[in-house]
Image (cartoon, rainbow, N blue to C red):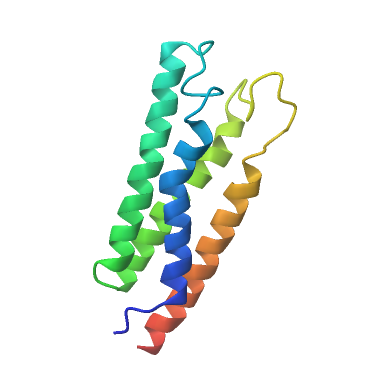
Length: 133
């Protein structure tokens, strides 16, 4: 079976963004280095960043270790979980996507929704490729 695959490559792109993106977005004065944040908030921010790294790298491992339907399924699910849980976090009581004085409703949408769409496209393309054998 060919190791080249547009579908797996697209999901891999999302996996890399999932692994690295939280560090790019949060390792700064607005999050990790914010002196106004209590230690427990920083703990959960660190947990979220580590989760993104774990999901992204595990997705890559599943996608590329031995290309298969099971690896594709696992890789796509793992690549999607961070973004799905980020969107679902808006449903918790009192939750907001930004701290004051931020006024944006959900600025993360510019990454979360495209990441899910690219993962879905990659999944469909790779399923078709695998079905052709």
